[in-house]
Structures are given as structure tokens and as C-alpha cells.
Picture 1 (cartoon, rainbow, N blue to C red):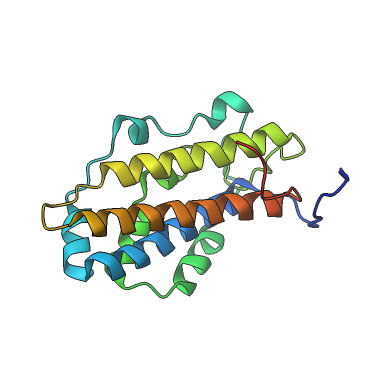
Picture 2: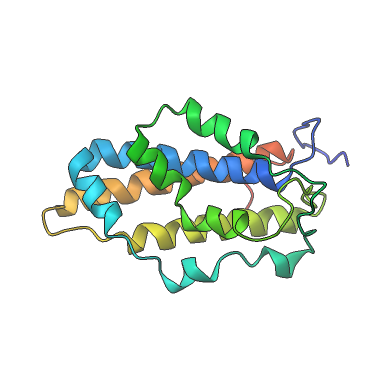
Length: 185
């Protein structure tokens, strides 16, 4: 699996590892949004969030490659998901909204085995995962109901924060797969 110029990482990425990156990106974004809007306004904004049609349809990964269904022999990897979220030291309100992130929930509420190794030897799969996750993040950010008191400067700061966190997510996903984080989209 050596590719010229590729970074090397000794472990294959499982679906749960991908979801950890998703939760971390979303959690860091929520921390930044708290700084931008303030805790009270952010909680009001998040409480009024209604998922878009795109968020409700969930992941299309099942169309890219078959994922094994969860079995009784495959434990749910809750510790793997919980530890990085706990390490962010979010208050309980923000932690709730990290776990409530619709894109993440489409996976954990399905019967897909989260311990399944992703077929990352196919670079198109990595690109598709990165694109789907960032598209879902954009859809989430666009659907967040900002009240009139969220001035245009605050809106633009929030959009920039979202873009930055999901670019970092995408870069980390590529690096973990041993690819350059500067892949063309």
C-alpha cells in the first residue's frame, strides 16, 4: 500500500475512527461558536435547530462500499467515541449537542458495524468520505437558525470558523490515510 510521497500510518482506519474525527471537528466548532455568540445565545440557536433534508437523508457511504451490519459479536465502541469528546472538556450543554450532530447519528443509529475497517486503499473512498462529511457540515451550518441579533459580522465569523474546522478535519482524514492533505476536490 506504499504510494510515492505518501505519509505512512501503521493502522487502518475504522468507521469509528472516522466518527471520532467528525465529533472532534463539530465539538471544536461549537466551542468557537460559543465564543462568537456567547453561551446563552448559542444554546438558544442550537435548541431551535431543525435538520435539513440533506441532514435527514444521512450518509450515502452505503452506496460507495458495503458496510457490515453490527452483530452481537461486535461490541459498540462507545469508549473510542467518548474519550476524545471528554478530552475536549465541553460543558454538558455543548457535549449534548456534539452527540446530537445529525451526521454522526446516522451512523450510530444504523446497524452498521462501527468497528468495520474502511476501504481506504481506494483513494476515491477517502475523497468521498471527506466530501460527504464537509457537505453535511456545510448543510448543518446553513440550517442553524441565527436570530436577528446575530449581526452579519458574527455570521461571517461563524461561517469562517465552520470552514476552518472542517478543512482541518479533511486534512486529518487524508493524513491518517497516508495521503497529502492537499488533495484536489
